Image (cartoon, chains in turn red, cyan):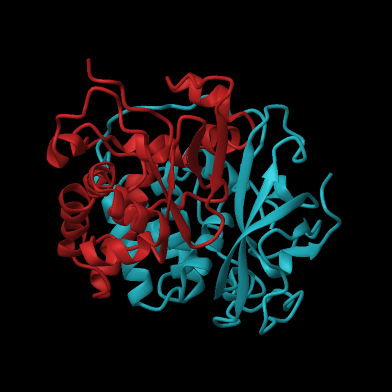
Length: 195
Length: 222
């Protein structure tokens, strides 16, 4: 983390001091936020679900039918998911997730959203020209691939189940989970084949 | 409400700023803002996520674009704290100046000076129904209505034909909950749109989760 001051950091500091004086906030609260979202919650949780779905067909079926129950069973922290829906990519269908009105994101399985997900460029363009945007982000889809965009406008959160890459047949669940990045579960990247 | 937050389909924001990896919080103040949002909830400065989202939507639009995600949250936190009577704009500004802030800094917060946004907006467009009005496969038309208050129908999908592709049950209705009407529930549906019907030139499928009051029955799309 950097430590320079900006108008926003100074105003935050002012409100922080006033809230601490009124016993409405403690520095421990801030440390808890830092620890929770830096260490306990993040895309590693979503990657566990994807890796298991790739190796366990019955689990994949359950995940696609009722992911909400599964994340409750796993006990992922982080909140922000009243209902989780998982969308599986196929050879002919690609899914990609956005929230154009704010920045809704499945915290419990992906952690806090990256900056670009919350900024105007992605939010304005992915619902207007997804093929072009994905290409700019490094994912060139065949013209025959149907793109399905999920704009998270209510409390349902979406997670993309990416395609399992070729060349990974010998890998176990733990090794597979390491290949699965945040971007592939938002739907803005695919996992390269292992050769 | 119409506003800067309703970014879907807008022209002019070209840069994606995509990075594969980044720190969860770039600066400590971002984590502080996160903790202050939680503190606001504990202090009763907002009751639910819709009131919080609406506070973000009401900040200074230039700050919305320039201050980043946690800058937007900062604006919402200050708005809610001032509207709840917990802090005043003056005491925050005085403290910020004492810490070295400039009088010329753009302040994101815009607490309501008049009617309280939690109660000051018109009431429901349609009462909740017990039984879902639509089923999977039904063609629908979205409303062209743009309410003054909070809503979750993006502008790009107003007055457009779509198809119900999933029934999601009853959920708290944001348009009312954001304004202090309590948790009235409405039926929620996944509605699938053809991008060309939305007026875009690339062909793809677009899905939104929309509440029943945003929808009316329509003729089947050809």
